Amino acid sequence: MRLGVIDVGSNTVHLLVVDAHPGAQPLPAMSHKRVLRLSEHVTADGLIDASGIADLTQFVGECVTIAEDAGIRELMSFVTSAVREAPNGQAVLDHVREHTGQELRVLTGEEEARVTFLAARRWFGWSSGRLFGIDIGGGSLELATGIDETPDTAVSLPLGAGRLTRELAGDPPSAEDLRALRTRVRAEIAGVARDLTRWGTPDRTVGTSKTIRSLARLTGAAPSSDGPFAPRSLARAGLSDLVPRLAAMTATERAQLPGVSVERSAQVLAGAVVIEATMDLFDVDSLDVCPWALREGLILRRLDALV
View: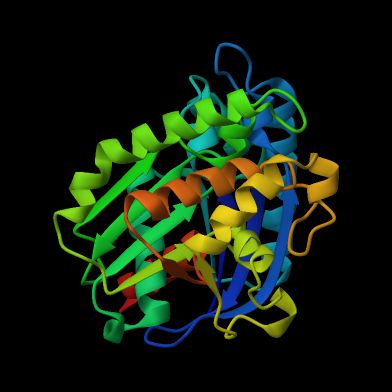
């Protein structure tokens, strides 16, 4: 059967269409995405502005048409932190439904962490033992640990790469601002560390998201052209060396680096600060990069429900 999922993130809206059957690996059939940066369409009151609503509605409608033309059996649509935190979030959802017919479902931060954890578990398998999953998006950081497909603990923190980048003035930011950001990030992560470490030392730490893939590429991992099955990892030592280099560059200069797109060049620094802090506080020397994340986890969960 052919399934589709629209993932509305803080940075990007992404349609993924897969050919999938219960018990089998979902095979990508097509992908369509656009950088909308909904988080940058937030007013001082936290509302998503009219321009952001219009852009989202237009692109969701475009995704619906493309998915239908691709012959999908079912199209699922989900929104994450940018919409769920907005006071007018329900009005945004209503507007999209009225103009496209598509119902967007709000995922909680914890649910994001749990679904992404499921994707990582299925990718790496039971032989990996206890997994510790790290996922960073534009608006939030998700952490989860467990020995099964459902994590023992899953938490979400407002430490997304896009969100934190908006707190940094200057291009590049000043050393003082970066130090203050690093201190705040570490304090927030430390506040939930006990909830995750009380389950014991993980056998494998896994990182998901475009930001982590970019950081791995910058520290020597295989390029995306090598395909999803090429093993990739991110070492804490390499990341610690990378952060001051990124901090000294402008966004334009970072966009020239391998694995860093123009759209993400501004926020890769903040993402690196968050991931370095996470690896340090949880004493992770290296993490394995997982090509599956939230979208694949949503598809896997839907397939499980069909059995």
